[in-house]
Every structure is written in C-alpha cells, then in structure tokens.
Image (tube, rainbow, N blue to C red):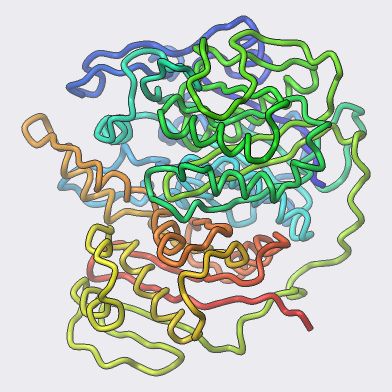
Length: 580
C-alpha cells in the first residue's frame, strides 16, 4: 500500500481542500453559462476561474496552467512537510493539454507548450531535483498519474510522490468538445434521464503519497490500481463497459465489495459514458454500492478530474458521507445502480471506496482506497532499486527504428524508396494494407501503428488475440504537437473557424496507444508518458513499475515522437516478464 498524507484543491469553488469540500457539502456549483467566451460562436456552460481569482493565483513568469499547478502543489507540500529536494521524491503531473493555449496558428511552436517542459518549470520552482513525469492519457490522466506514483513507490524507486492533476480551459479545448457535440449549454446532469452532455471545468488538485505508514489514525491508503483498455473505439466507450469492468476486476472489487462506502464514477453526463459506467458496475456485481459523480459541482476538469475527485472522496470517506450527484433526478442508464442527488450518511462507516474513470483512446482506470487501519499492511518490498528488475528486454532483439529516412528492424535496414510522411504510407501499403483507418490517424498514431506492425511481425506473435496480458506504454517529449498544429489551423480567427472533430480527437497522444489496442484487441494497460527530454533511466523505472500489474506479462514500449514531418522517430521494443 501507499498512503495519502496531504492534499489540496484549487478550483473556482475555493483554494483549499476544505473550502472545496464545504462548498460541495453546501450544494454549491461553479458552473456558469458563457456567451462569446474566447470568441466562440456557441454558448456553453463551464466552471471557470474569474479574472479576480486569476489575479490572486498567477505567479510571475508562469502561465495560467503552471501557476495553479505550482500553487496547489506548494500547499500540499507545506502540509506534508516533505523534502522535495531529496532524490527519493518525485513530481508527477496528470494533464491533457497543459499550456496548449500558447500555441498560435502561423507562429513558431513555443517550448512551454510541451507538457514535460511545463512540468519541469514547475518542479524546479518547487525545488525538486528529480526528473518530473507527465501522464497524458486523456480524461484518465489524473488517476493514471496516481497509479504511476503508487507503483513507483511500491517498487521502492521513491519514498514520496507529489501528484498534481490540472487543466485550464481555452478556445482550443472548448471548441474541440463542441465539435464533438458533447457539450451541454445547460448545467450537466450525470446519469440522468434528461442528460444532454458535459460541462468543462478548470482546476488543479494535488495528493502527496508516501511509502511509510503515517501516524494519523484516519490515514487513507491506496490498496490497488489498474488501467485497462476497451479495444473498441478511440472516442466512444465500449457498450458493455469492457475496459471499465476489467479495471474494476483488476482491483479486486468483488473481495472488497462489502467494505465499499461508495463508488465515485466519472459521470460526465454524456449519453454513452454514463451508460457504459452503469453497465460496468452492474457486471462487477456492485449494484448494492452507492454511486456518485462530482461533475455537477466542477464540470469535467479533464486532467484534474481524477485527482480532484479522489481528494474530495477521501474527505467524504473520513466524514462518513456519500456525496450526492448534483443535477441528477431520474436514472437514465440501464445499469441498475444506486444514485442520489442528496448527500447521504454512511451509518455503517464502511472504510473504502472506488474511484473509476474513462477517456478517449479506450482508456479506463480504477483505484481502491481505504482507511489504512482497515486492511493489513503490505509486506515490505525490500530493495528493488535499479537495476534489480523482474522484467527483461526480449533477448536484445525485436527492435524497430523508424526515422524520416530509414527503417531498421532487428538491426537490418529495410529497402524503402520514400522519405518523411510518405515513408509511413509506403510501409503501410507494403506491410499492412488491410486497415484503411490508418489514413484517418494523425502522424503520431500512424508512426506508432506502423512501428508496432513491424514489431509484431518480427516477434511472430499472432495478432488480434483479445488479451489483457500485454500492455502498451509509450513515451515522448512533444505530446501530439503535429495534430495540435493542425487543429489550431482549423480554429484560426472567425472566417477560418471550422473545428474538425476528427482532428481534435487526435490532439491526445494516448490515441496512438489506443489505436494499437484496437488493432490487436489488447485489453491490458495502455499509457502515454511525456518527459522533458529522453531519459532512459526514468523510462526504465516507469516500465518496471508499470509491469508490477500482475496481469501484465509483456509490454510494447519505447520512445516515439513526431514534432514535425522532418524530425520524427519511433524506437519500439518488447519487454517480457522474466519467469526464470
């Protein structure tokens, strides 16, 4: 287990966890209707900081995004009294788009737009000396960041992890969700019969985790975590909640069901997400457990959602409260789950809860948290510092390297005639040819797809195996910048405002791992991490920590970056569990 020792939330409802919790208990919502915000042609409802609030949050020399990340982290760090300069302390950021509002059509790409660079700026300001990590997995980014922190601590790479989930709203993000017809102009109604769509929100939330059990009797621990993929569609969830169900099963909810006070669901108030979650909960035989969602108070805060909602839920667990789902009136999902608009008292004082979440790219994640006194302590892991590792690269072979001018598979160069993006098309025609969806993908996803196809051919493993024992974990520096630039071009000015939903979806780098999962029917973990620069030591730590998931027997992994058509690289390989 790992232990939650401090936290913070900065949102339009308040700048501390306590202020936010009391606002939720009072039934307050930060949702407001906006007309002509950022010169967008359609009105929308969202939870946004006011100009007055921003004036109090901004840090000189930092962006809006960086400022709220730094302020939230600093409050939690001060409360925890930890040494951020220690080589055993790590900073992990969960975000979807970070400083994307710095990207302007026709202008050079600023360094600060890359999430890893933004994370490094904040980490250095806070005093960290270790390399910061960014989990960039669409809406599950916050929970994915917590899961990564939990595993890194359990693997004994670090003693303390500071995890921040954050996103801010802007013309880029709001127009993108509007293009998908996913945004409601009215306050959202999670799980309700009359739900019309989501509201967006902005916030930063922090949770500090440590390996050592704290002395406070009401400490909450993370018992288990899991990330699973639907392998169904990049922007629509599986109708039977496959990935969410598998994530719930992986954290052993059946054994824990009688200890659960509630399930905090994603509850976006979109037609398909809420339906899917209800089905997954029913499949997991958790119909007797109360379910709630917090989007009616905060909107969908994207990368912040998983951390913010976990922190609020921890506070509710300690207070023996099952929070109400604001906006809910009548159940509008087929899964027979227990919902209430009103706050309820947990008279039985059950000691645990589940946080579940889902997102584009087929990603689903779940956490099991409990009062630490309610479960036996985990046995000591005992010296798992690098290079001690239960996993190995397969015989030093099955490598694929693709650059704009060459293709090398297992050390042998392939004969090709094209260069740049045309090279990827040539490889598709010569090596694949049966998956026309390739032509709808953004450059990063195409690169990942082709590299994986070559890798699987070299491995000789049968594709389309419908398994959950293989993970796909990729790394880069520039996120989805090529797709980002394409999308910015589609929303330039008023006359050039034609936001494309198909382009917007691929402005999430984890769509690349989602495409691999769909192609090969992989239901295991799919994750995408961003670093300030290529750091093989840190990559190895994340790989080994990720493979602590007992279901994972092998992993497609490596570095894949596509800053532009002339400077891309994919270097992928396979790790397998060493059974010797």
